[in-house]
Image (cartoon, rainbow, N blue to C red; front, side, top):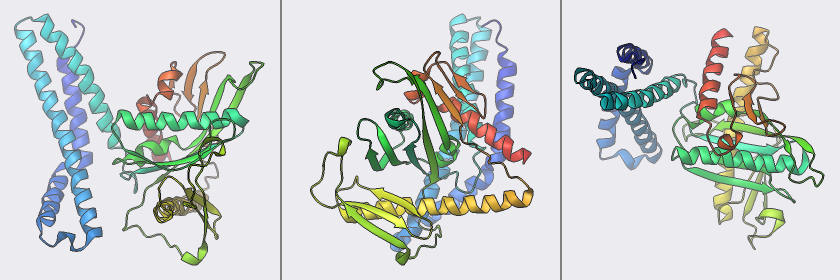
Length: 370
């Protein structure tokens, strides 16, 4: 405690908060909140449901952002008072409490600062993740299931709802693929840094000779679309197949053809949904996934054209972005940022925030250098 310079720490926190305030544009935010509040109070708001959902959703998002900032600013004020009390009375217990709170506030300010880096066109959206097993046989399928659990546990820790659209189980163990949504503001901007190829090295639990196995899984992250997003979609370009839902190992879990597979003929994109009870619900959910993937494809094509004009022929992500090594040593290392953890168990249990923060900062640096 004696080594903590509270004055310098608090001054640094206030400087960072001032920068965040400038980036967020709090005055404009308050003005927009007031305007949206008037729209919400209008008696005819729900005459247009799409507009009403847009207005109420935007108002909720902005109120949440403003409350997060003002609440953190209040905590810094309270911290300063706590330090003054402890210093004036030479109360070591109070100063110890202040040091604990300082660590918590510093973490919260860092997290809010990272949020200000999420300024992309779709960063504020919910996220749609697809995980596919790659090379490595049954180990890769098991790895894909481990990754799905990792992301859903991360979402649970943050109290973010997860909606599973489709799971395709492998014959022996694990998943061939899975598609699910993380329903929270800025989920796409936050999780988009997870897109790419993930690599697992471990002693295979499926090898009776106990040999080390390397396996791969691919993670795709796209934003969930809103009603106002425009995606050109001709019904004649979509092939619709229906089939029976199935569980692990091909076990039938549904006696009717309620599962739906959509194939977008011009692009070859295939999506499916089998987790709803009715064929109509599954088709609607599959259409959400298809539109999101078509939008992501459109943005990727636009970026590729821009990169070609700029003379940039290198992919910005690469084929392999993170290693999970469980044998002969234990480490999870991000190959882009260099950030690593010596506790793979906690990472697979959803402790991803530091990896996500490092990835977001790395991406912003790459964009600035481009």
